[in-house]
Length: 328
Image (cartoon, rainbow, N blue to C red; front, side):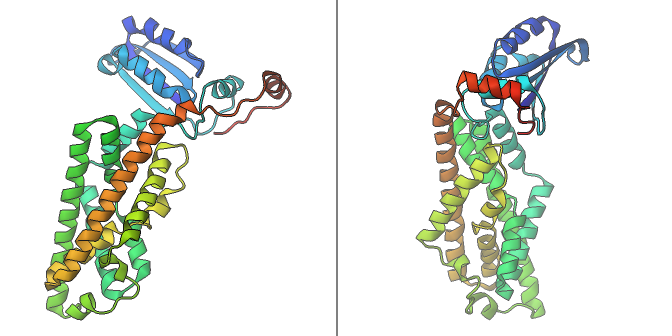
């Protein structure tokens, strides 16, 4: 279930109310006349089944709500409502499968913003990956993978391709190029300091590393894992279920590869630089392609596969005899 809050000038209120009241996906609807100060007008609240959100958002955009006012969409984590239960049952599709494109686009822009926090996390994660390479530590590699913020920007590439948003594509690509560039430079400088202090040697970088050798030796499995991980990550980001993201973060080697590139540059280990650069490119390309394909598939089929329906008699008996589910 989602809560829509529409703040609009008064002359739009009746048309907005008509759109919302005509939809079976809306379970409750309220208007507060004259409550809005900027813009001067009314505030409309509606509880909407997640499966029906896209159609309503599109209709409200056609009315110019986004230009003359504001439309906010927020998840309702807990609700107790017979009307909400009926709206969820009657709206085609499954709430877990529904992709609310407005939410996905907003999150993509947020995750791709190039700011101090993003660059800091990229640099810190890559530095930890560099230490993991020197110590040949899988635990530190996993930590660096989890800390890295790059997946949001990579997923945004797929969103931009599916939704045909060149601005988002440019924003995400910029965040990735500059983010990895800064992180590699920072790690290279740290490697030079470690080399000058005698803490890191060329043997640490080019010697046998059984626990972290996969970072600079890409193969077909690197690409396959990147595709599978990105598909799972995009499903987690676009559905109501977020449990799969941790597994995505520790399945791909973008941050460790960047760390190895930085160390390779510091010591002139060009074989390491080349192998890790190829690993980095393979992972980013594989994840972007998989994200695009997953989103395109979701957008094409989810609404055409309605959730299983009970018979009318059984549904009526369930509603009257037992309390409806209270959480979604």
